[in-house]
Amino acid sequence: MSEAINIGSVDDIDEGEAKVISAAEAGTEDDIAVFHAEDGNFYALNDECTHETASLADGWIEGTEVECPVHSAKFCLKSGEAMCMPATIAARTHKVEVVDGDVLLYPNVPVAEQA
Image (cartoon, rainbow, N blue to C red):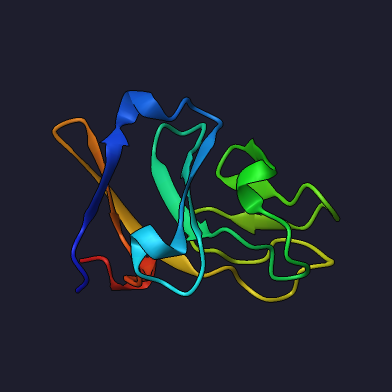
C-alpha cells in the first residue's frame, strides 16, 4: 500500500466541493480530485473525465455522483463507475480516509483494495 498524503482537515473542503492534488504531489501519472460528497464522506478519482480530458473537480457533485462539466458524463464517487453516456470507462479511484479530522489520501490504492 502506498503511503498516505495528509491533504488537510475536513474543514478545508466544503461539502459539495473538491480539491485537486497534483500528480507531482501524489506521485501518480495523473492529478487526483478529492471530493467531499453530500453524504459527508470523502472520495477520490483521477481528475480527468474518461470521455474527454475535462477536470472532474470542476464538475457538479450531486449525492455521491460527479457530473463532468463539459459533456455531462456522470461518475459514481464510490466506485468510479461511469453512470451515463458519453463516458463508458470508469474513472480510477484512490482510497481516502479521515483520521482525527484530517483527510488522508492513498494514491494508487483503488477503493476495491480497502480493507
